[in-house]
Image (cartoon, rainbow, N blue to C red; front, side, top):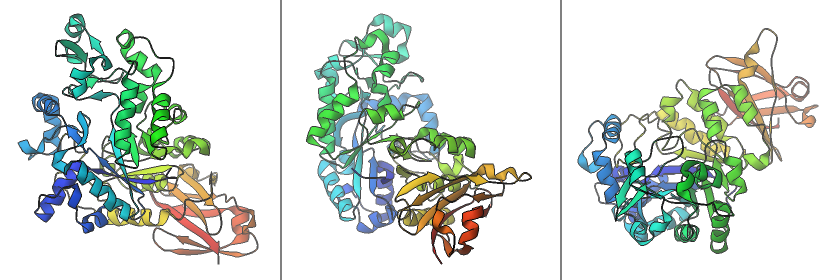
Length: 487
């Protein structure tokens, strides 16, 4: 398994549209120019998640064209939208076969080989909760789906649809309206788990890791609460341990990532996932204060090492828009230097502000923030060598007349020299503090601190560092990533 991987998400269809426009050729995943990969994959990335490679549903596309709410969101993101820009949802999967628009299965194989030559692994999606309304299983295995009757459809017409004489539920989670373009699988249905293993095995043969969409929806407690009597009796065992156990017999090394919400990360870790989304940290970095982040990071390494940290992905608002004024940089420094896996999103480094609906196959034109791009590429390039050994949070102390130390986050990685310290001011004002350092052997010698983000050097006396800690004075949303070595 990859330890603490750095994952870079690419929205495959619009990204390929942009590559074709720039090169003036009908390029597929098989013949992406090498220089495109070189400029697309940042230094320090261990894996590329190609989001949305599977065959999209014509039936789902019909729904998207007719849905006024979806159409409104499309126009907001892409004001000059043309009919060809609406390509269908990658989470309305007709078959787990690479879409011919992208070049088909052989093209994906060539793409994976090209990534492997660069030492980069490939991650793909799986959607366990639902399929497209024209998925072959609708006709071949209707017993795998949540079904209802005419009374259900009359009572809640947006939640059900009729196909081949059966009334089948639209996919949903328990907190939001149904998704109008997908059919709900029944996690309790006999036979579905074996079918899921087969589908996952087919995907695992084509990649190195699988990101499982909305994985918590398949846990017994959540599924029973969502569907009640429509689901039938729950099996004796949980869905994921059974499925993952069987999958690993054939693919023991495939990395499994759970999209997880509602504080269910620990549950899904225990059920077999290697990494789970850390949505709680995202919310705290984006909307709360440093103390809430500190509390979140007080959990043990056995939990934190299996979290996937992010401040942007295709489901969240763009970081440049949602975390303005430099907060995005502070949050980026934080997630990049923490234990666990890290997820970055194509366009995040360049400061894109438009969150493109996944139904669309073309990005709007947006200016590039060159300074922000330089910051992120520098951060990823230097951080890999700093995340090694033991990790610990550090205390930030202040003074009675200056409470700004409460807004400073600090932690250290310590193994062989040099040690590394990350310090982040999660506030819109300057902050000062002294950071207590965890190394008793600092005293009696001089030390050189190099900020890996900008190359600045600071000479400090070891006696002062050991006695008083490291004094830092940070601008709004500022931070350091310091390498600590003998002078």
